[in-house]
Image (cartoon, rainbow, N blue to C red; front, side, top):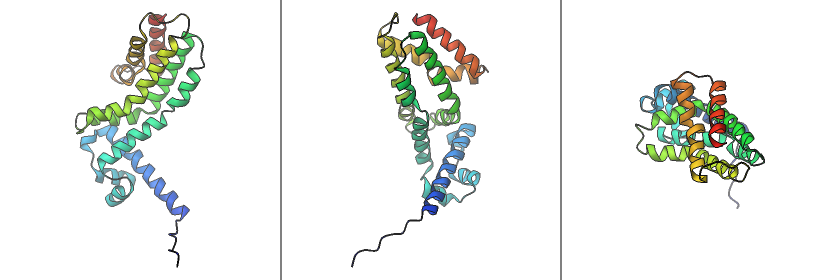
Length: 203
């Protein structure tokens, strides 16, 4: 006699996916506002309107939640398509304009995620590894942009590696946060100035 096939309810699966998404959304907000170390699973459950056991069953421990936030943030950044479009550009200025706008959109749109990760670093047992995982694709994308810039005319006056490091300095998450959060600049103004700095320095 063949084994009975377990019935899977599409509505139940949709509800579970929605609960999971809400838990991650509220956890991100709480980690960004209070800091990872000051938030408990009970806090996340209360903000989501579910029991603590539902949080554990759906996404796991607080550490598991943070890992999911990191992975989700990388996927949501849309960097892969942005890089495909950028590599089609044929002038240094257009590449730098696209970098300024694309990294601005990513940092602005993923601001809560970045803050949640940043505030977790001092208390997370693997903070350095966490930051590396959160930013590795971002950094590699900027180094890919640097290599592309060196195929164009005029090419930057630095080595390819140095150009990549400079792009990270201007367009990495720390640069955006310094101007917008620490100094109160608007995203528009930060984008304009960072772009102009890059164009001037790499011309």
